[in-house]
Image (tube, rainbow, N blue to C red):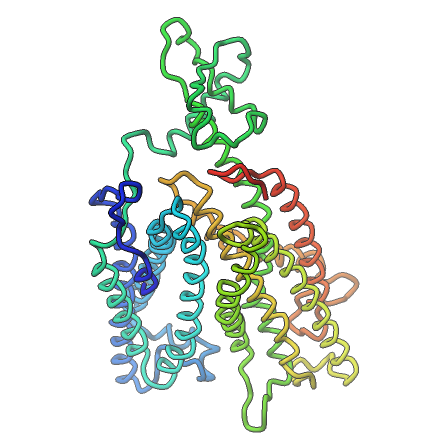
Length: 507
């Protein structure tokens, strides 16, 4: 949580002074509290398992380097059922805490900047860069340090250290409570009710054409005045008086409410076209690693790189590229575009999608080269023999994936935070997170469909055969490159007509 220390204290000017409702930070505090509780229980369960296993004379938690790791059923079958329940409950508790913390704390951090102030508007755009930088730095450090502690010292110590760090972060966050800015809570309907009511009312008035429309001309020039009345015109039906209220007047939805619903509806195409990017994102921890496991992993005599360790290259690429992007690229681009963030959010997302297409093309070419090498050396039927092709061939696709994340993922974070109603900003960040979650499920579904369609045809192995020397991951990567290119084209189509909330600019 140290990144929140970069946030400014409340300004004394009337334009930036904000009220402080007492319940606003509750979701932000609740997430780390729940996660630290889960980590504490993980520490307890690991300690109990260690004590139990010490009496039995063998470990019951897996070691990252222990060959027995491949057969967890032998260990877990002898562990007490209560310990298993405690362990699983702890994991779910951590997951629940992260689910509450991730969208809320990021939105809360971005709320510390006043978008109406030119200087703070620039800092707000940089916040998302450095937020992602901190998250990736922490992830790389955790993988390196925590895995070493758990593998060589103790699982209890590893979980305990993470629990202490989480509690320290929570205390640090609470220490700055009096310096944070809080959004003013308006006395009005829930945004879910407002937006949902617009859709319901428009549906009820679907066939009405001649009833009067209650339009406040002053409001038509307000916050959402940039949205064309021609866009999603069916929602304008919500401006009609409801049936049975024509004679007695009655409240109707305002132009602001309708345009807010239109803005929310405009996010769906961007969300949908981003799912293919998430499918590609899921391959880095699956098939990329399986490729590396078949290749020569010797970096220099006496040192063999674990195939999974190449995933750290993504985090390292992000850590290296973000400072260059924020401190060099953005100022240079700002001189040409006159935009605080250098390029627009959709331009940034589109750049990441394009890099994702290139990443899949490179991955397909490398896999084709790996298969040709296996055939050249007669290793097609010997899946356990190392292919004489260095694992460093995979570095470009990992690095490209990391660079694509700098553009696409950070852009999506900022976009879904900025383009939803103020009260729904944490929900907006959750929408960004849902892209990765749904994309992961779609990746599994796509693999299952292709496995069923290609397996057993004319006696040939499927694209994902256990023997990768007979499989065709290159075909799968070409398919993903094609899907990514199609999604990128659709993204460009929807982006060109998208108008930013609070602005009259497009794309």
